[in-house]
Amino acid sequence: MSEVRLSGVTAGYGVEAVLEDIDLTVPEGTTTAVLGGSGSGKTTLLRVVAGFLRPRSGTIVVGGRTVAGPGVSVPPERRGVGYVRQDGGLFPHLSVAGNITFGLPWPRNRHHDRVLELLELVGLPAAMAERRPDQLSGGQQQRVALARALAPRPALILLDEPFSSLDTALRTTTREATARALRATGSTAILVTHDQDEALSFADEVAILAHGRFRQVDRPRTVYREPVDAEVAAFLGDAVMMAGSAADGRVACLLGSLPFQGPVLQGDVEVMIRPEQITLTLPGAGQVDAVVHSVAYFGHDAAVELDLVDDASHRVRARVLGMDTPAPGEHVGVSVAGPVRAFGREVFAATPSPSVARRRART
Ligand SMILES: Nc1ncnc2c1ncn2[C@@H]1O[C@H](COP(=O)(O)OP(=O)(O)OP(=O)(O)O)[C@@H](O)[C@H]1O
Image 1 (cartoon, rainbow, N blue to C red):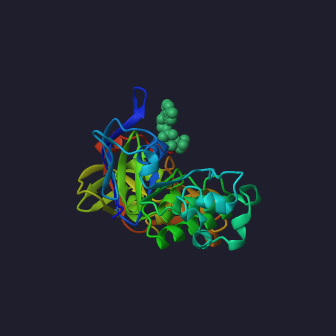
Image 2 (cartoon, rainbow, N blue to C red):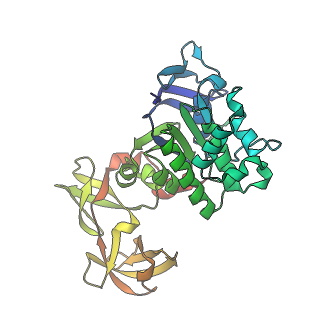
Image 3 (cartoon, rainbow, N blue to C red):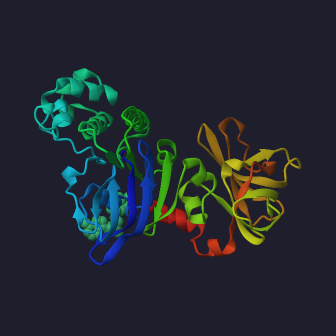
């Protein structure tokens, strides 16, 4: 049983609390991605769980054992927690095999079979066992770091932005290899990242950390499609926001009368639409008409900025397939696919605008 449970954890440095009274449960054999802007406390969270920083209050239970709590502070090396750092942190003077077995007690550290098993698990050939870290690519180094963390069969693996220093192609393959290795070993893991695609594609659950608290913890699909507020929505990708009026499960806004998800709301609301929900048709065939202002082409898809004909002060962004891009100046019809998300005005007023939230998320 290697569930991880944090209850009422407050932690920080000096007088400042970085994490305030947070709760988080990572079910056994699953991965939770903690997503948050720079300085939001992601690494602090991992340090507290690993035992490098003592929480001021609260309890941390790993695999049924309290490792931090009132009167309890199990040292890092006895927590059964593996840690993979952003830069891998391999020992440069040791071979791959030496790195992998470094933390294993004698005589287990002599077992070459275990090294080969771990190399296979992370998708590296056995021939790499005798190489030194400087003879490996960045992605290979990260795989060795993962193998080293998995070697003692820890109750929990902590992954601190382990893919962020890799280029795009390598990041994808290393991420996939890591996900496979975690699944194959039934590991429980916490991944810290500021990359929304990584969080959504890698983890079983995504926990959004902002202002010292978890704003939402849920399955990737749910946090993306049903964010609790505009700030969380902006963390997870582009969001088109506009005012609307809700009645009987539909919301009237500049893009027509649309079904919405969320709490039962009546009256003034803020509407959130994902750009890929906005589809383009022939003029007159959609809910409203628009003129294409500009197109950013990405190959697989394109971002199209649209000025609405009925309200030129409103520019909205659509994401369309790359093979279907209109030209700037073209007249198009605009429709919205699927239910949109509506937030009560008081929720919206309490959170920054999406552009401010996005800026904060990037800084
Ligand atoms: N050793 C330290 N002493 C004092 N303050 C610290 C220390 N480490 C981190 N902080 C502060 O705690 C806050 C949270 O830092 P943390 O490293 O946990 O954020 P993060 O979300 O991991 O950021 P990033 O994505 O930039 O790595 C920041 O304001 C940071 O300046």
